Image 1: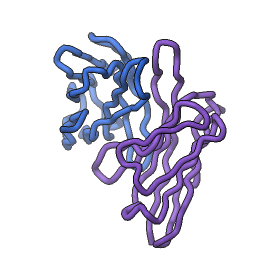
Image 2: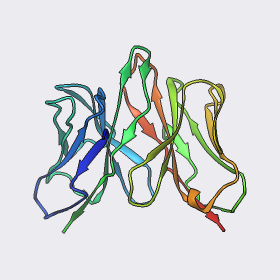
Image 3: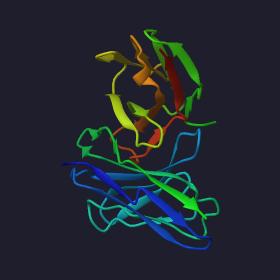
Length: 115
Length: 113
């Protein structure tokens, strides 16, 4: 059963803690993305990666970190430097072809709440 | 100015109406255009994907792209209450690009029975 799996579905973080959100895909996709969604807003790009061991900052990378050690995995760490981390986090992936990029598919999201 | 602009709505229509959702963009390098549907507290679901100007139809959905005007639309015919959701447009640059995929703010649609 192919797809993108995000875990956990709900996550609670105390002030000053780092937390890591998991994103795994078995679609053999090349590129992977992390987005943040706040209530009533669209998706804002945090980080993205086109190949293993390489990634680029998106529009709101401050306070976040990522790694891409395996093609199928792209974990996101929300650090204590992120001052307002409560949000819905979405992971996506897609193929890179000779002609460019294909459509992106999403996981079901992780809802992070600071307590 | 945002790269992608989308009216957040909300948009409320009666069942059976034709719905028109729109996005404008400023980056002429955008070559790929997608529409997603997102139900509350769920991940976005891909509805339509196109990379050329003109119309693309899939069932009750039609995606329209006008690259000269930097304007894309999604039409929903015979709208149903189950179509009530947030609709997001997304765009990406061509093959010699960074791989970024940029989203609009999303339009909330309510279809009333």
